Amino acid sequence: MIATERLARIEKREYRGGPIAGVVCIALAALFLTFDSVLKVLSLRPAVEGTIALGYPVELVQWIGIAELVCLVVYLVPRTSVLGGLLLTGYLGGAVATHVRISSPLATHVLFPIYVALVLWLGLYLRDQRLRQLLPLVQ
Image (spheres, rainbow, N blue to C red):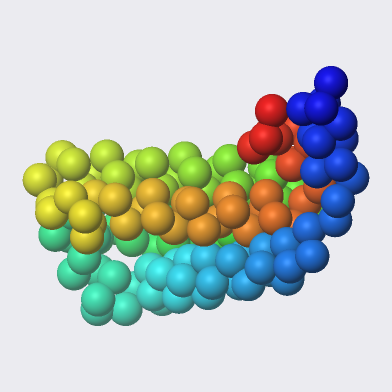
């Protein structure tokens, strides 16, 4: 009985710094993804060289950037942010698979998209009460 009362108090308690921390996480992820997608959409040299090094043709650089940008816009719209998070998770999963395929270093290249996804989802989790109710960390 004591455990259920404690859980009830935890669920009712407001996240004091949660929404602010959530916005900060979302802003950090959005800034990185915006920078990355703009480099690709504009076909700037670092994006083109990086994409070629990963084994993709030059013609796909802009399309990859557009896909990333569309997913990011869906993520930044509050009503569709969870869908955007799912789309970006798929996009970042492709980045992980690409780095695994070419045997990139684990901590710096293979896991980096996972770090970005964690910040992305942490921001949503801290900001969106419905998501916290759907996926409670405390049982």
